[in-house]
Image (tube, rainbow, N blue to C red; front, side, top):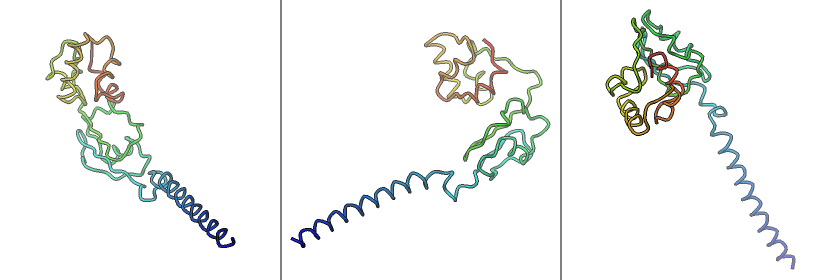
Length: 168
């Protein structure tokens, strides 16, 4: 009888130890895999190119902003800093491209422009320009800049950059 009781108690102890190990493993996965809790993740790397004197990859502290990396990269006098959100927080692997100031600000009609003309807009690749033309042909003309968010690959940050150059 005592042997059965000890065997049963031993079995429950094993289950309890397994449960504790499972909870501890889940705890470690949740809290120590997150970047803000990971002691290895105190810096990020950001690539800066375009109208800067020192293009390249910069290592910065987590929580740095675009303004911080541009101080290091030294924008040229021809840099259009008004088209960049200097207060935006940076993330690892971000790319900051500084475009030149256009002496005569171009205006591209989003409803009539070709793929080639659309690629002249800052941050619009040929692939994205093609998607804009396809969307326009399928659904009709755009009536405001926010409708461009319906195009895969265009973000709110992209809209801020191109809004000065777009007309309808």
